Length: 149
Image (cartoon, rainbow, N blue to C red):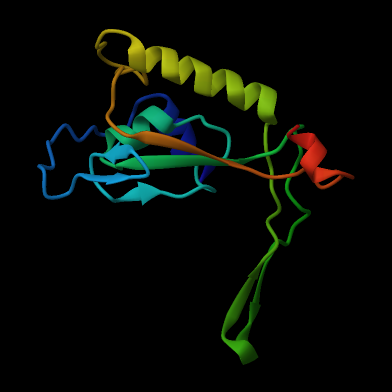
């Protein structure tokens, strides 16, 4: 996972420049999506590969979960099988670089999207798509609502 993020944020993933056509375009709550296939929160937890993920063809990318303050994930092991229940328990936790760092990355991404088309690298300026943000409280939060006030 970390290797893919590292490669993607350096712009070393192929770009999909196809126009998917009107049959895949959709509008939800006033937001126009190029296509309905998106990348859910959890992959790009710290908003490091938004451009690359939109560039490979996702119609939207959700970053996060982003916590107010930086924090590590839970101690390993974090994933457990329960064969008798045919289940997996995920206790990965919510590792995050924190809202200040991630907010700066999202701001830089938005500035890049407004800039004229560029070439090469992770830039690329102007991949079509929507970026959503998933937020979470820190493990040590006493008042989660106050974290976001």
